[in-house]
Amino acid sequence: MDTFEINKDGTGEREINVEEIMGKIRESIRERKELAGFPVSDTGDLQRGPSVHIGDSNIQRDLEYVNSNWDTKNNSYFISSHRPVVGKFLIRSREMVNGEIKRYVDPIFWKQTEFNGSTVRLLNYTAGKFNHYNNEIEQLRSEIDFGMKKLRPEVEDKIEQLRPEFEDRIEHLKSEFDNKIGELRPEINNTIRSEVNSIVTSMKLEIENMAWLASIIESKAKERHKKQEIETSDTENFDINYFRFEEQFRGSREDIKQRQLNFINYFTGCSNVLDIGCGRGEFLELLKDLGIGGKGIDIDDTMVDYCLSKGLNVEQEEAISYLKKLEDKSLDGIFIDQVVEHLEPDYLINLLQLCFQKLKYGYYIFVETVNPLSLVSFANFYIDMTHKKPIHPETLKFLLTSVGFRDLDTKFLSPVSEEARLQKVPINSGVEEWVKNYLGTYNQNIEKLNNILYGAQDYAVIGKK
Image 1 (cartoon, rainbow, N blue to C red):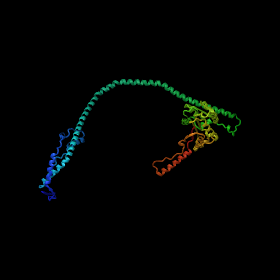
Image 2 (cartoon, rainbow, N blue to C red):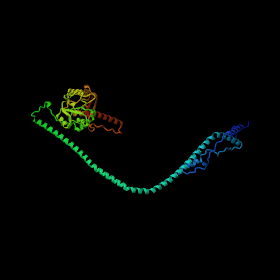
Image 3 (cartoon, rainbow, N blue to C red):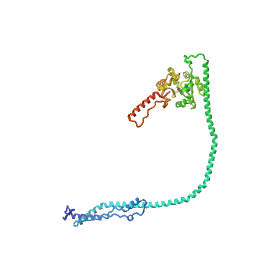
Image 4 (cartoon, rainbow, N blue to C red):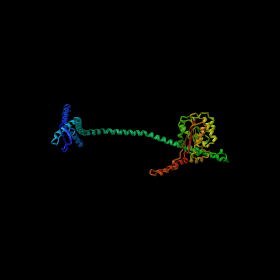
C-alpha cells in the first residue's frame, strides 16, 4: 500500500493512506451531487444597508450594524498549506474534511442567515414606518398650532359675547339668594325664639321646683318648731329631708337619668314596670319619655309629692304591702335602684320572693346597690345614715337565685375617674430589661390596688324569671 509520513518538523510522526483519502474524497463528491442545493434568499435590499435614519444615534448605530452583519456565511475562508511536498495532499484532505462538516452545518447557518435577514428587513420596515409617522405627527402638530392660532380670536370673541349673559345670570342668582335668605330669616328668628322660650320655660320650671321644695322645707320646719319635745330615741320619729340629701350626695337628676339610660333595654316593649323606691322619679321619667308604661312607689312623702308635680304615676306605699295587693304575674319589669342597702335581711328576702311572684315569665328584675368590693365606695357608704349594711355581689346573686331568678348577670357601674386612681409609672422604650420588668411588676401591683381601693362604686344584678 502506498503510504508516507509527515509531521510538524518534517521527520514524520504519523502514517497517511493516500488511497483511503482519495476514496473518501470520491465518496464525498458523489454524496454532494445527490444532495439538493439550498434556495438563495433575495438579499439585495439588505446588501444596500438601511435606507432610513433614526434621530437616536445609538439606535441608528445598532441598525447599521445589523444591516452589515446579518449574513453568517464565511466566504473569505480558503484552504492552503505551506508545506512544499505534502501540501497538496494536506489541502485535498482538509477540503474533504471541510466538505464533510459543511454537509451538517450549512443547513444550520442557512436557517440562521434566513432568520437574520428576515429580522433585519422587519427592523428596516419598522424604522421606515417610524420615520413616516413621526413626520406625519410633526405635520399635524404644525396644523394644530396653526388652527389654534386661527381659532383663538373667534373663541375670545364668543366669550366676550357670552360675558353679559353670564353676568346677568349671576346677578339673577344673587337676587334669588337674597330673596331666599329674606324668606328664611323669619323662620330662623322663630326657631331661635322657640329655643330661647324652651330654655326659659325649663329654667322657670326648675325655679318652680326649687320654690316648691323651699315651701315644703319651710312647712316642715314650722311643724318641728311647734313640737315642744323631740324623742331622739324613737327611730320612727327620725325625719330627714331625703330630697335635699340626694341632691347633695347622689347627684343631679340629669346625671342619674343619663346613667340609668344604659339599663332601659331590659324594659323595652314593657307596659307595667314597677320602680320600687323611685325617689325623684328619674327612671320613671325615662320610661315615660320612651313610651314604656311604669309606676313608682316610695315611702318618702317629699319624693312622692315631687314626682306627682312632674306628672309621674307614683304612690306613697311600703313595698311589701303594695306587692301583696298585686296579682301574681302582673308586672313585666321591676327596677330597684339604691334601695336594698336600706333593708334588713329578712325584709329583703321577703321582698325578692314577692317580686318573683308578681313578675311575668321571661321578664327582668334589675337591682342596683353600692359596691362593697371598692374601698372608696365602702368609705362613702355611711354618709347616708339610713343605710343598714352593704350587700356583697355574690350574696345578692345567691338571694335572687334562691327565690327562682335565672340567667343572672352582674354589671359594675360608676367607675372612679382616672385622676383619682393611683398612677402607674410610664415605661420608656430605652430602659434596660431588668428595669422594664421591675416597673411592669410595680404597675401590675398598682392596678390590683386600684381595683381594691378605687373599684366601681356601684354594681347591679339583673335576673330573668
